[in-house]
Image 1 (cartoon, rainbow, N blue to C red):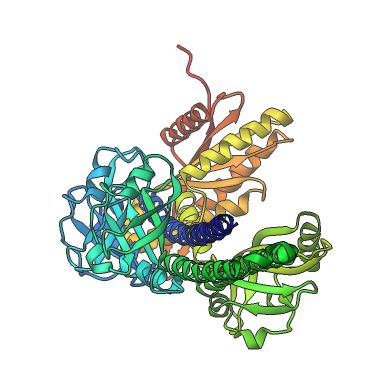
Image 2: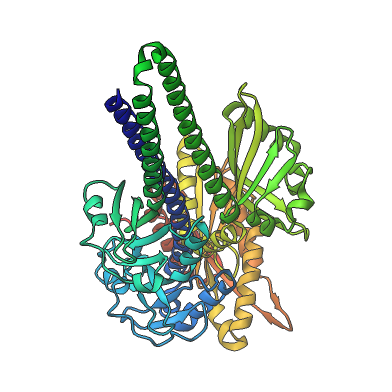
Length: 617
């Protein structure tokens, strides 16, 4: 009987210890996922800026793309978008820093020996984002790790590298704020083994190589998991959970001290040992009454076991709920995205600090107001009807919304709304996550316009012209209605530039663009190929005489005087016309034949038009 009681208590104590260990492991697994999400989001945010600048440089004219002044202007135009967490530097093909978003502090520094530059020299990066190992900034002396992308021309010629030094202090602050006790460690580690950021012991850990540790033994087996080990930094035994961040050469780890588990085990051993000692004394003192009291003793022991098991189960649930609530509160308060929670009727219950920063309203000011009151007047009732219909059908909605902040400014935000249901599957709460993408959208729009439109006249450039031409050719193939390509070259434009100056020449080109647009339909396309060369695409011609009338109107308007502020300019135009599909089956042939017809018009005396005619050999 005594042996059985000892075995039962020892088994219960061991089970309690194992349960505590599993609870600790689950806690670190949840924590490491939250930190992984934050690191991934911060890297992606910086990479969007790198891509934007790389693409903007790529579409610049050849002379500007090699100009340090142009690079400096391009980066300084977005200076307000950066903070002390990171900045952007452009490094020329020789490894010399020529432009930066934070002033001139690093201009002239040589980075040819750094891994984040060398990897792009021979296209080894294949156009992908590169994340370098941690190091001290050559000029700033800060603890950094670097993100970089290769910059090249449209032909693939190497122009240099655009790099973003990431301040390690940013991650140290977030990691420190995410801990709910001092025994927890959080670390970000490069795949080459070097530590980027760790709390605690950040100074001791920075740049330390961990490739020979238990962590990398586990990483070689699986990209995510848990293990128990003694830290190489503070010699504290912890339960660690780690995750290799997908698509990035980074590893995030979270460790929690198991001292509490050991203390509880020792305490339970003492309590259990004392209980056993009392039980044995009672059994010895009442041995001669064992037959009469057996049933009562058995009932008492059963109640003890039930009470003990119920106590352990309750303790486990309370611990799990407490940790889960702490983690949820931690993520809510420290998330970089704005978060808003409403009831089933759409009334705001709470918002996090990031939402208050975005909207300008405090949580108290928003309480009991409806969420739709924050939306801009840009959206009509149909938009909200579709949003609510999607929420009812799918339980969530994702899209972009114009938001009006407290100052009356309108911001474009990316928003995701999820539904929380009650036990009867009815909507109970709505949780909205949102982030400001106004600047991102504006940057994308600017880059797109610079890549596709002429900056002087606002007309489509050569790239956009070719895209329009191919689309109109496909439309002609479907409709069987002919299309005309009109090539317009200005006569005597050089004389205006030479005598009146380039400023007047630019004014003349703008006025030419306006006159050309006034000669065509809204469905036609006017483009500037460069210099004084323009093209007009006349699509879906239902009347054969439409081309001639349009061309004559262009000749007349180009031959009319141009008033350039206080001066007058006289020019004319030479026009070549090619018809599709008669004069060319593809875009290149059609453009070449229209150009050939234009040159024939120039040879015939200018200020005239000429249809393409094949040369008989």
